[in-house]
Length: 213
Image: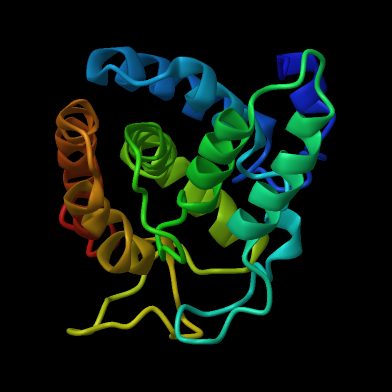
């Protein structure tokens, strides 16, 4: 069906946060979550390999409260339909739509709610790569790319739109909320450990910023 070698050609790796390494990490998580939950892994793996092929079409500087001009998940879902329809042997229409739905529904700010187990596994695997040690690394990679400071206090009720957004703001505004958004028991179990690590990291970082340790 969709091979790793073919999927790799669809990513330009210009974004260290959503490069093909991200895809491989999500694939590893999906292969852990999917079998435990009883998902159709052919659908899950095809969705994972194609889920971010239009990430570059979304504005990386857009704040959370600004309207979207492009939704990379919906664009990728439509592109995936065309890619899968050209595969030999051609998958069934039901398979293609199952993959497309999982891709369309994988975003944190859902335009489409994951309705199938396979879409839920895709969602959870993708979100788990945004938390834990790798999530912190990705937040700082994004911050460095966009000139963010290393640290900043987060005001109560922060809505994600400050020009002084830092990885600490990202943790408070989004990353800390990911565990409660997950769908599968397996995904939530992984998230609990990763969340605990992030809490400890940012507490330690705050103490170092203030010269306490």
